[in-house]
Structure formats: structure tokens, C-alpha cells
Length: 91
Image (cartoon, rainbow, N blue to C red; front, side, top):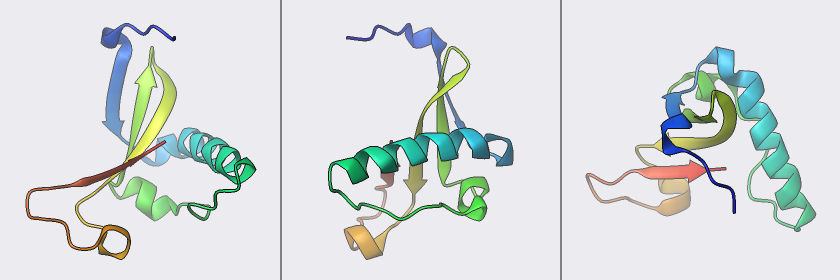
């Protein structure tokens, strides 16, 4: 098991400066899913979505370690979400 000091973890809204890191993480996740026969999403995610406040970057000791996408709604996938609830997709 990987041990991480929680004080080394940071989460921030992604910006255009994070595009390369986010693409690397999402591409690796997409390849892994494809190897499992899972076609969960299509690539690439648009720069507009990444810079538009939907994506957040997780860093450990300053290095990119994960990505999640926070949506206020996603009726196409989840249907109607009750008021006050939000949806997070993570990788």
C-alpha cells in the first residue's frame, strides 16, 4: 500500500497550464480501460472544458497524481440529480 502524507496533497481547479498533465493522466486511464475492453469515454477532452472549471488536478508533493471532473449536472449520463447534489468523475 502506498503511504502518502496528507499534508502533501493539494487539489486545485485546472487551468490551461495544466493541459499537458491532465491529458497524460486521462490518456493513461483511457488506455488502461481500453485494455480491459471498456470504452467508457472518447478522447480528447476539449481545452474549453478543462479550462472551463470542470476539471480539477490532484497533486502529491507538487506532482500531478490524479484528475477529477466536477459537474453540477449530467442528465445525459445520470438523469436528473436532486437539488444540492453534485457529480464528480475521477481518474
